[in-house]
Length: 122
Image (spheres, rainbow, N blue to C red):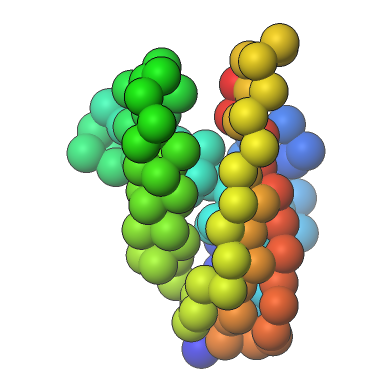
């Protein structure tokens, strides 16, 4: 399997102008794909309106099932990522001020085991 993914910067912008250096492969490509998918807001991308996580409603919910729904949608998005073969764990940490959600995950991929990462949604 040969996965190629457009490189992304620390601020989640795509990289351009460096030829093949602007692309990620293997484990780095899977990590970039996961990060990009988790940061997608539903109905917020003109070329993929039905894609993403419904962060607007999930983060605004104050009921006790909000965290369970966040975990459920996060696991569903991770399961759709190319190269992810198993989801070992997903956890959340909510911060009220400033309003921020940190998602931490551990997955097995086609290239290695116990790949960890975290994404912050503000």
